Amino acid sequence: MTVLNLTPVLNAPSLQTLQQFYAALFGLSLAEDMGWHRRLQAGPQTSRAAQLMLATTGGEGTPVPELRIAVDDVDAYAEKARALGHDILYGPETESWGARRFMLLDPAGNLLEVVAGAP
Image 1 (cartoon, rainbow, N blue to C red):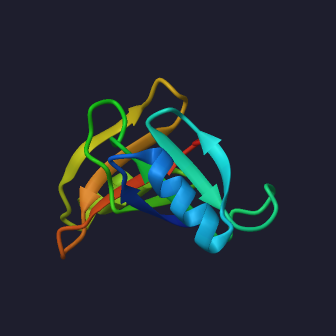
Image 2: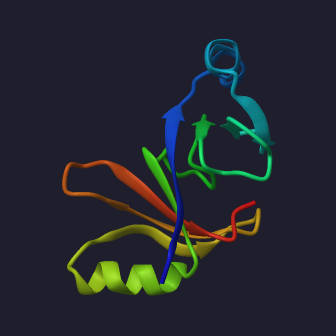
């Protein structure tokens, strides 16, 4: 089991407004646009080291998570979360856009999305 990257996710009532802000101030460029979320990043398109997700929804009617954690095996992490006594709020599900994910709360109440296979 491996964590591949961590991406903060900001609730964005206007994707365009927030994208313009982060592009103008920090030089972040658009790396992905799914219509309901946009992924911005610094540096080359081949790197995911510095990225930020802007979202109007969490997708499939779910709320926007505060943090997206990309992993190699969603089901193994879901099983581990349950074994540690954590409640899974959503999933694991394979979504229409090809990602497999689940959502849970951390002890502070932050909504986490654990995902594999996301573009």
